[in-house]
Image (tube, rainbow, N blue to C red):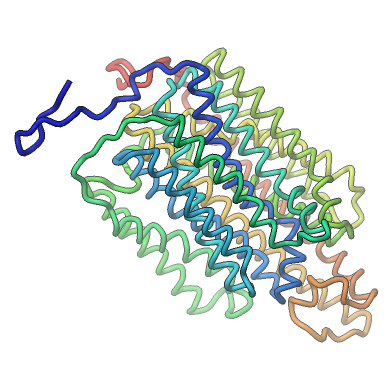
Length: 523
């Protein structure tokens, strides 16, 4: 069949892949390439967690910079996700996902070559931009080729991949740092080969429709969303150190955030192709899923980043040992995501798994709130297993519930909205929890050293460089970090409880078995 273009000339009709029912093998071939790329993207966000003490010590960084090495990539991923998601509904998804892989590879190579912390943070931003594209486009492609009812089966694979990458990153990072001849720079280089493999696989197996429309890109919306997401994180990083929490500088940051949010809403309401479609956000299931995803993001990234630091600094473990101690988190995530994915695909019912996952996540973080520098390690290992189970049940199923409420034509932007807020929760969580940790550690160390008659001679750098500290100071620092870790998990548990409330309030609609919504689905 042929179409007539605007000049009256005939042109071939673009392929329409969505209505075609792919075989299980064809889906797995596409999925393998997508999951390989997604694995490297998520891995890069956590692989540095156990390597960070070494990285910051080697590059002479501070505790605030420690947090920002993680936050920078998460923030870039967060603010770029809705942009990538919207583009995936307008342009070729294959080209977009391949572009995001290339951006990610460039950022990874440059991050491994960084000579100081500011350079590293800047390169992590480039990595984050690629990660945003991979996250948004992978979910969009899956939503475009698999009906929601069957999607539970394949979402289980994606959830397992994300869970394994999230919690295996610290272990792999620790092993790389401790391996002679490698070092921390290879925590960035190691992501490159698998990303390139995924590029080749997708080129060979992924064939998806190209729907070209004349549209206006919502540039102002993207800029305002980026500003609104960035300002609070920058404020949290500097407040309490560079200026007081209650100060005119804080008022400027918060006021600027409020203005950016207000302007973003105005722009999104008026733009014909908004980056974040507010009509989708206003839908009950999506709105509740967004709130729940923010809470999950805090628990997911907070637990993986700070538990490794706890085992190393408070427990005196090597990066590799710290990674091994986080294995229960990985095992719990695998069990949770695979079990929930298979049961949802079998029954079409998803709410019970969101409720159970929220309970387990909140319970695990609440138990972690009881740890200090004297807590037996096996206690912490048992607690993070609960966190992993809950995280696995929640990670993909919020997205799945929302995808069930929209037609395939809107699945990209809708999936990206949920991913955006989950990543935002992670970025805010790491930043806020890191700020609380830094403040409490600084206060405890200062007071305890004063009690010992020792006057601190350095800033934050010396606290992270334990091998070059006097033995009495090392013990003080270990104790301070151990005690402060319990505090930040208490905060995370309170935030995770919000996910339980939202999941209980969600109205369950059994997953449909078609890609497109019928009139009955829309009623």
